[in-house]
Length: 233
Image (cartoon, rainbow, N blue to C red; front, side):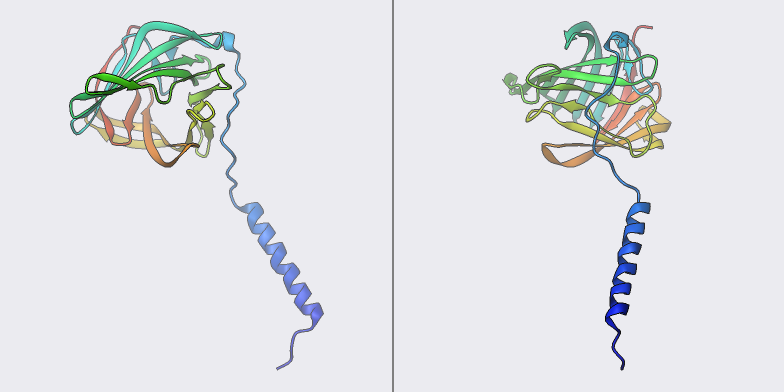
């Protein structure tokens, strides 16, 4: 058998390298998660409606997973964080009928785009009715923390963004999986839902979340929406 010449071997190597480069260029590229957002803080509001998030006082989502509950309530209260007046959204979580966490989250909405931004949270962790810690608490503008994008108003599959950017404390992020998901939960059947896969730069693993247009969060990992209480218009 005649062996290939050095010229033929080099030519073949060049051809293989060129083919590999072409395939790499054509393959979809995932970008890093965005952690900075160009917004005019003066145009952010503590009251309003994002595409997938409602910031109206009194608006409440009741979620359940077996005997565990998660109640998300838009409060009448506001708080100035990083120079912006934010709306306080309280989350109360129970496990087996016992309170395990209460967080006061600080959100604003850009009513022109439907984007909802997250400016931090205060957290109380509970055990046997007593506060045991404040794990995960952070505020934009404090100790290098920056506000994040909680939910985009016009999401596109493949979008990747940080929801929290507090080094060594809270680095939650999300990737848009789909914007046309159909989801059934005890509260009803919803179409054109936003499906995100959320993870943390500080921990392993991820969770799927679903947001319905004009409603908000309807499924959070094992928690599913069972009841909606309308807020003030």
